[in-house]
Length: 391
Image 1 (cartoon, one colour):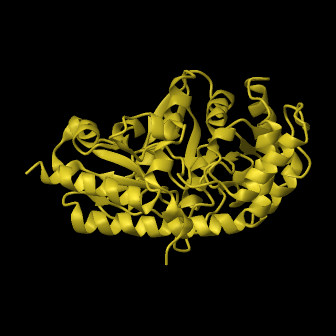
Image 2 (cartoon, rainbow, N blue to C red):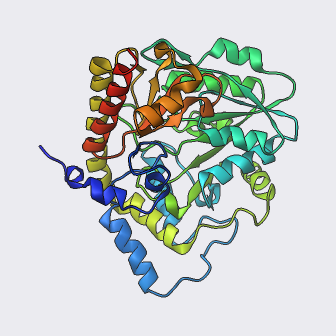
Image 3 (spheres, rainbow, N blue to C red):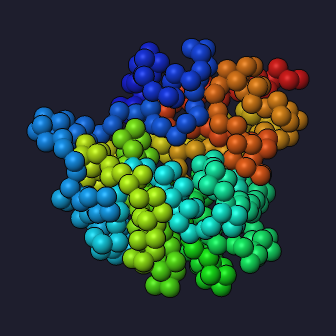
């Protein structure tokens, strides 16, 4: 059965004025930055239009440290209650994006020179947030056996020093696509508590999951870990509204939240009123759109897995449990540092290069399959032809 997204034409995509479709030349298929190529929910668009038409575009309610406009906190609380995580309005702070939250968290919970631990490969702004604020990154590369990605808990223990202050978690994990199980999260919580680490948990992709994989908010594991955790999430990836620059910071330790807010006063501004209207509508009314989108993404996910297995010899893909990202292993092709050039210039496909995701990313590339099946198929066929040209 066809899906409405199949009707999106290549001409329509190429006409989009956005970063994804304007970075490369017209002869390159872009499957890099984590935007979807799908229309945003009509209900979200209508809510933004209604707010614009109201001419009520002044400063948002809630101030610089509040939970936003009327109804926004209730939408967030209801959403997280679905994950058995029970919040109060005073636990919530609206911010202008997740990346600013990573930077602010690094500054708030570690002093210059102190260590922040993260699991690589990892979304590059995690590393930027540590390095560019003068903190010291400590990397714990995950293990890959060709089929699954696992946390190296033994190595994690060996990394801790008296200077370790923060553990950064990404769940669902970008780029490898893991949705961590409860037992894994409980081991991480035990690790953080034993070493008295603060935790910054990026859960932005929490609503993008497949095959019954369950998202468990890290701070919901127990009261003790909740007191050491700052959680970052929001509607932007799930509902394809990244350009609105809105995020949510949550901590049930209000002293921790105050420390977070005080790290850069007035530099993290409240999201604008249009973005807040979009958030409220996304969480309250766009469930049907999300269900349909997940069905399409799931089809693309299986298509990528089958294509890699059957038609890309030497390429490995560990599958995607959450996110709409495929983390592809090209190491056996022997291209080394030339992989990015091979993909871009020989295959004419724009993917995110693995080394930018830190140690363990060498020889990998990230493919965004949140686009039409025509584009996904075309990109993979180009890679197939490129691999054949290596013989």
